[in-house]
Amino acid sequence: MEKKTIAIVCGGDSAEHDVSMRSAEGIESFLDKERYNVYKVEIHAHKWEAILPEGTRSTVDKNDFSFMVSGKSIRPDYAYITIHGAPGENGVLQGYFDLIGMPYSTCNVLVEAMTYDKFVLNNYMRGLGVSVADSLTVKIGHDKEVTDEDIISRIGLPCFVKPARGGSSFGTTKVKTAEELRPAIEIALKEGEDVMVEAFMQGTEITCGCYKTRTKSTVFPITEVVSQNEFFDYDAKYNGQVSEITPARISAELTERVQKLTSMIYDILGCHGIIRIDYIITEGDKINLLEINTTPGMTATSFIPQQVRAAGLDIKDVLTEIIEDNIGFS
Image: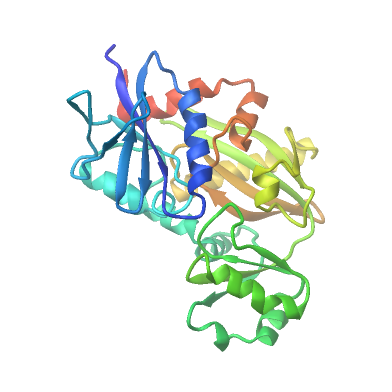
């Protein structure tokens, strides 16, 4: 069988650029090189470049996402998107690939845009009967119109202040006092135009991955997240200040409920590829949705590879299934 060419699309324009590059290295190491020719394509603002094996770079032609390798034009057969943040997690890149007719690994434009905005997602999921924390939004240029008293009376303390769009906990603050609220909003506004103020929920944080093909549905074992810090912040996520326990130390009955909910959300939204859903379990084993990650981290130590191993699966086989399902391999 002739090798197909896979482009791992990474980088992006957000503060998560470097995290994305690390995920790209992980995916590159996982992919079946006997089956695929693999190139990383780094996107940053208007600069799109394919990273060639010898370390040189080739400019990507945005008309068809092709690039030159040894004097030959290469157009990938498939784009594996691992950009955390804009433009790969907000629907923009998906729209581009739809326009040029290139299959890709993530959800579609609508799902990406909706899951990228935490405030929009929370309100949508609440309408479907999924439990989420109470929240409100503060928009840039209108932040003075919402007083601290308004926020505290509605949301309470402690609370979380975070950019409505973004990830990796950049710009996120756990606010304990009224005096901390306004500085936290200002920090979050530096990361984006909208800020979400979210009620604090005391409980056990867990995360569950899932992927589906036309013939198969797989929900991974659940990971329990125990941060050494105030919350699961950047240092906890990427600098080892956390304990990640797979499978989570929860009952079999609760495990089944979380996995069923994860599968149901995947189907309701019409997700594609691998997603990871974060929850917090509060008193009475109540399952509360925190966030849906449509381009989850994919380094060797990230949650998804951990869960794949715990399920007794090979990440190389998982990625092959997803790619082949999408580009019609026989």
